[in-house]
Length: 271
Image (cartoon, rainbow, N blue to C red; front, side):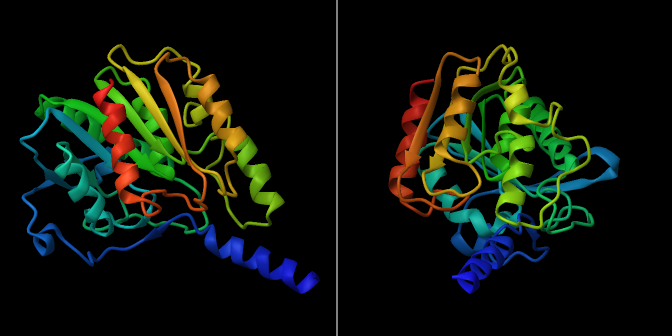
């Protein structure tokens, strides 16, 4: 029994390497013959962010897609292709330290960096200035948490789709200790506007019409109770929580791609 417990602890610690950046793209839009535009977006500290814009002629919503810090945006083109097929334009970007974005030293055992929030802001500002679409902030893992904490108070975000967002950093630090995960958080991040639970209690941006939380019931970092707490704490009236009962990961897309896309489409349709 003792050896089994030790194995589980080691497994969870390895699985919880939140940030795993790759600079080389395994796949590009050209591999899938996807119509796109390469974009460079300036961020804070002189960082330059690499982004791909995928237009759709079927609708007027633009998804700002923030990934979970694993790999780079080239690993998520299948999900982009599905969303474009459903009529959404998509802009996906890499945080600094990822893909063709500026170099940035990353500790793989740090859960998130404050600079990634700046990168979201830079992409949002770019989209706000250039496009005339309704903007939807969509992310998973740390990208979901950033989409919530930044998107919730932006005036030109119409909707937020957050797949397994972080809820509360104070509780998360306790959970890291509970499962013996060697993970760190930036100093002073718990009781701040980087914390999702703090932000959703505030007045939302003037054009926000709804928020969709997605959760897997077997997630060992965030429980259903955590997500329900986030839902109930959210001050906006139109809010939903969709749960995949068999998911155990930080990204529920691969559980059922078709159902996942349908939930997103139905949510945006009702905004």
